[in-house]
Image 1: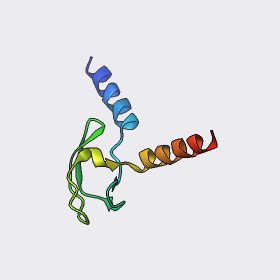
Image 2: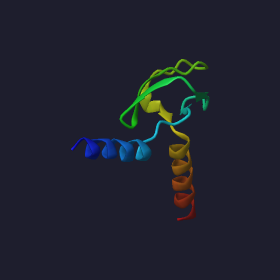
Image 3: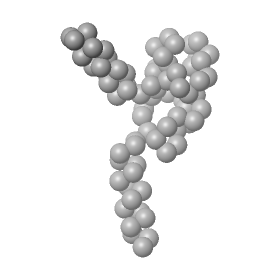
Length: 76
């Protein structure tokens, strides 16, 4: 049973890996110091603009996804 738990944690960690940095959506500054747990940011402060709302930060992958979504909407 312990092996199953360990294997599940390994898979989970791979799927929801902690990013190297987050991007502030207010000023687009990369932020390297933050608290990340279970696939989401818990605490972060932008050193440039002071933004503290975790909902106003995104990973590089999320930024790419947003830009691709915007390109698709422009094509329609």
